[in-house]
Length: 339
Image 1: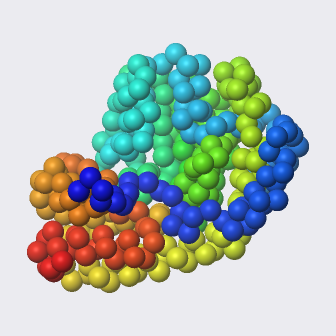
Image 2: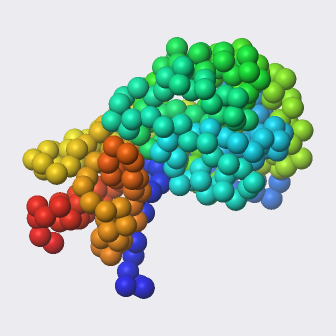
């Protein structure tokens, strides 16, 4: 068992891997690896400025989501952060490493509605920060523009910082809220290129927000971010411009979702939730630890959540062979097929 390969079904990395255009760009750019050339960073910032109709003062670059979050936490001096549940393992790993307490905001996982502003407002006196993945990285729920406006409006009034994580937004057809976030007083859009763009090996990300908040954050970010590798800036820009890559990704994920749902549609002991992101949510019966152990013994590391509504597996779309293997193990576990 120690030598058996474990397939990881806990991440959000694009199943098509890094764009071929990005790989070709990196091959051409590798000759500049020994030098620091900030023109690639300037080009990236100018592109965001034009794309989102904002100013350079509204943009901050960094090493990725964890880098931004750590700097926001240091700047705010806060220790209580509200995150809609279920809270992903990635958030917990980062936040648990510091002196920060997660305040979960419970919603019905089967309900498509992301949040209720009246319910959410009751937490504002008890928290320092609000972190909203949009789409939600476990349930796939998406905030409407009206919900975002209401949350940001209340946060401005209560002087609370809102961080909207749009790292999975490219897997959907929803538009970014970047152009409007700059009109707030203390809210940010953050995004990493590690997942959808497949650039986990070149840590890079950005934040967009109002001028004053970005200026304050730069005091914590820029002692380090001026050294962000030009290769990372260049790769991110090429990937963002690759429309064919986005089309192929969306078509592939849609096709694989159809395959998985067709394979499982006759199963009476499971329920599938698809909210249009890069994963499916599978509700099953059983004990959380027993289900986890069953999959792990078959070589699959899974994302599993025990909620009041039931037990849920998060199934991110992978290569077809892996998706087929996951379905086979799932059907075996519920007694519908043999290995």
